[in-house]
Length: 349
Image 1 (cartoon, rainbow, N blue to C red):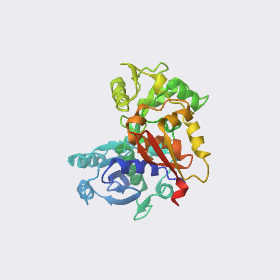
Image 2: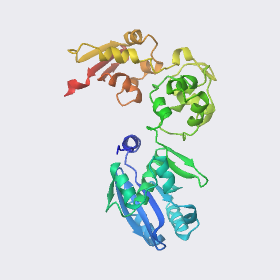
Image 3: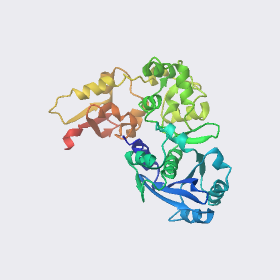
Image 4: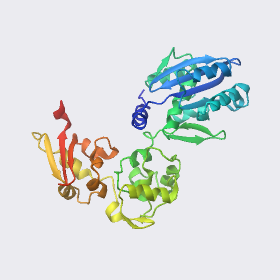
């Protein structure tokens, strides 16, 4: 099974100086007097059991407090004493506490209702090292993993019980597409719907965009109406969208509209550059291009950010697919001379 969480962990590593610890708790999983707890760090999950709030507190404090606690409990369990103790213990330590249900998380991950060893095997297949063994408490491990999605603002709240569940950004066609929009450019809801296929329309794009939590690693602020108007749909509203686009040096026609003629991006805009690099003479390992030459190749203006910010050309940007898909990486940028240097990736070997 493909590891669904590798991209998530890569983004978490960029965000945190120290990789965070997520704690998962499942009350009354074994017996009324024995509950489960898991501490997860990256792809390692260490499980244990506790028999009361005091023992849980010792787990939470060893070796240091987790960054988030996720409690997986059914409706019945949420009315029980163990659940109340777990909530109280975590909140006494000023730890963020979220609540979910195992079945809701499994559904969000596209997995069938699994329990016990079957769930442990599914998590192991996804690349998680469950210790001391997979059969200890995979439900608590699943809750701990859910905590990472919460920490990275890649979650949604579903169901009558308001369960926090993962939002698989890489698996979602809209969010995957929006990630391809370069820094400093925008696309319209209508254009995105057209690119995604017949089953999509503007209303569907807007509906799914509303699901994004504020701060999610998807540049939803780069979507605008047909005439370039900003929209309340983006998490945070018009003012937040305006500020983010201005920060990216997107040109504005007025306070409520971006200048689409200069800022519009389409899926095919950079395809000529990708093809140009892909078909460059095989003997050439290094290539320098002037920004005006690149604009001549793509037949459109580059975004203002590409001329003002050297970081626009960094290989770790989502839009670096433009040259990386052709087998090149950027080795240098001189904005004063408006030159970009590319090198073939295979020349590094």
